[in-house]
Amino acid sequence: MKSVFVTVGTTSFDDLIATVCSPAALQVLQSRGYQKLVLQVGRGELKPAVRGSPALAVEAFRFKDSLAEDLRRADLVISHAGAGSCLETLEEGKPLIVVTNEKLMNNHQLELAKQLHRDGHVLYCNCSTLVETLQSMDLSTLKPYPPGQPEKFALFLDQVVGFQ
Amino acid sequence: MQSLLPVALLLPLLLVPLALLARRRRGRRTPPLRLLVVAGSGGHTTEILRLLSCLSESYSPRHYIFADSDKMSEAKIRSFEQKRAETFSNSQFTLDRIPRSREVRQSWTSSVVTTLYSLLYSIPLTYRLKPDLILCNGPGTCVPVCISALLLRLLGIKRTIIVYVESICRVETLSLSGKILYYFSDYFIVQWPDLKEKYPKSVYLGRIV
Image (cartoon, rainbow over all chains, first blue to last red):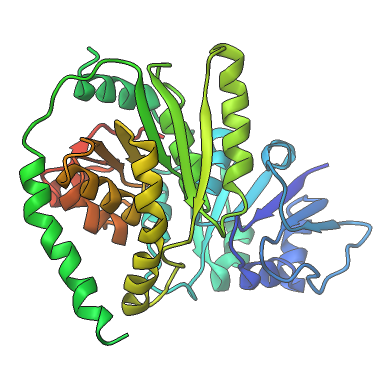
């Protein structure tokens, strides 16, 4: 069952949830072959105004200790621009659409989304362009994301404290 | 409130010359190093645990500090430390909470007041822990903790190395904590080349989380 996982991390991002649950978005998701929609709503409203249909099942929850399982099961992830959400998703090798929250002032999270997009790892849009992104997306164009290297940090630290 | 403000503004100004003086000597340390880790909400804790993932057991015990309003960090830290204990049998860690020094989007002036309040907790806590090294990556909580460490340094009580790693989500601009700690940290690490250009005293190791 092809499924979409939507995550807002530890924030609330009701605009994203509302957009994904809009008739237009649900229509597009269905037409692109998705049969399940799982929403992690964080601190936002838990009951998005949508019912599932036989063609597209909808589930929602606030938080879990780990989203690893939901990410693994997903065929597409739609996420807010939080670093943790983006990186976890990319490291699971899942296609990712990053949606920026325009209601956040000084939205520094745009920087990461833009950079990941520049590097070809994610699609990125805002709530008003999400539906058209879903309509036209070609996920095969996304490049795999090489993991970060914390071992370089460990090496650096050992050097500065004089362990080396 | 009015009378607090000049005092609050003076404090960082006093610390700048003294912190610069204190930075000169950087001695070789011997293991084990007592490590203080400042954890934060959202991705900060995830990032900092990744930074810790490759450290040897010479960085032990690990003392984690996070804000009292932070609900998620404790579970993540315990899970990380549990896995670690499977490899290193003598693994030790502690958890402490201090009042949150600044909520996201909190105004500048009220942030100074809440940071001063957090200092009332972070100073005795840092004094008790006397870490050899502080590792932080951006949540507001790191400011009072690092100020506390600098105070201990000025008073000759403990010479702590302060290492700040800016979050991976900072590509072109620094966070507020980063802008402050760029001047007060011993090592300031950035993860994107644009920032290295803008902040020449920073260290660039590529993406490390």
